[in-house]
Length: 225
Image 1 (cartoon, rainbow, N blue to C red):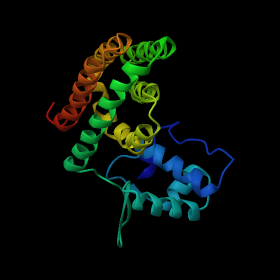
Image 2: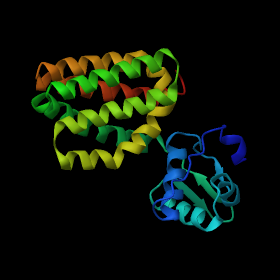
Image 3: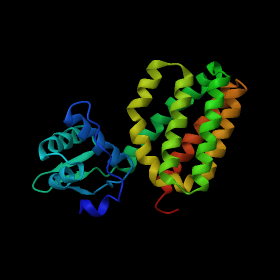
């Protein structure tokens, strides 16, 4: 049941501005990305509508859009289910992420100023604190913010747009391994900051490539770890 799969406080508040169907879509996508709605979970329109305080129509429209984008599977005579990604799907996306982020790290090392480096230091400290507090949700959010900041410091708009297309799926795959990656992920972030601060483009590329590869391998090993 949906109600058993949504812990207290996980349902996002729907902001008033913007079309209702867009707000419902964003709310459901956030619940899927954070795994409050887990892969394989049955999605009942009436229950979702009740949780979000809307009618069933915008929920139905949102589920159809999420189906088109690969987040939800619509099964004849069964209903809607959160998509369960295959190992190949995850591997392909995380491999592309490695290519994008390695180039972003190189460009960040070439372009970042002291303010940008300070911002990375601040995010890294926040992530380390979240790991110490075992706050997985904050770890995932801060990890995403750290990588987004590196992408921003790269200064390449096209690269940032491409990364934005895979960002939410990266969060989706990272959530179940965030605890396993633990403090090691933030040690690697510190190494990346050092390379960027030293303007060492080759080192920054190397560190980011190894960092994202560690996450990819951890994802594949998650069931046996």
